[in-house]
Length: 159
Image (tube, rainbow, N blue to C red; front, top):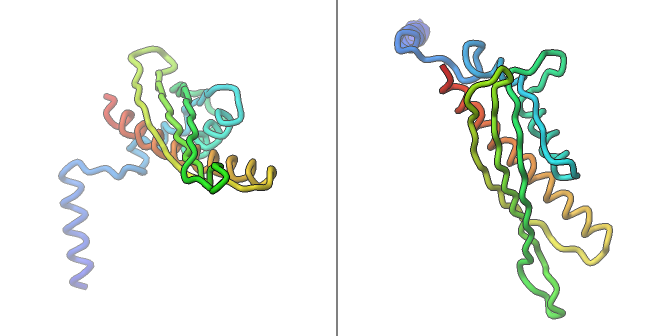
């Protein structure tokens, strides 16, 4: 009984201070599904767009209120060396610049996020390709998560 009374006091206190949950209906969560995403037309761009649409909960049935344009820059550098001077690991750095524009016009919001991941270098050709693609998938998922957080922050500051 005492815990229930304490919880009720805490809830009333939070309601009085203007607190709104990040994922509540009054927050930015409902407008995230109405963001259309465009990326460059290649395998990595497709992966980032797919991850962003999943992260934002894109609803294709509704007309978009926002357009999110991303520009990707990927670099890969070898780490560690074997005795035959081949790399044992690779470091993949994915830089994503994004611009969020209202569909009805208005000022755009932009930002840049960078993600770094590593993957093992394999001797077999198919295994090497699979490892590289796995590294790209993990980098795309993390980049989408970071961009989603930036977009939520930007939308929460909108009037």
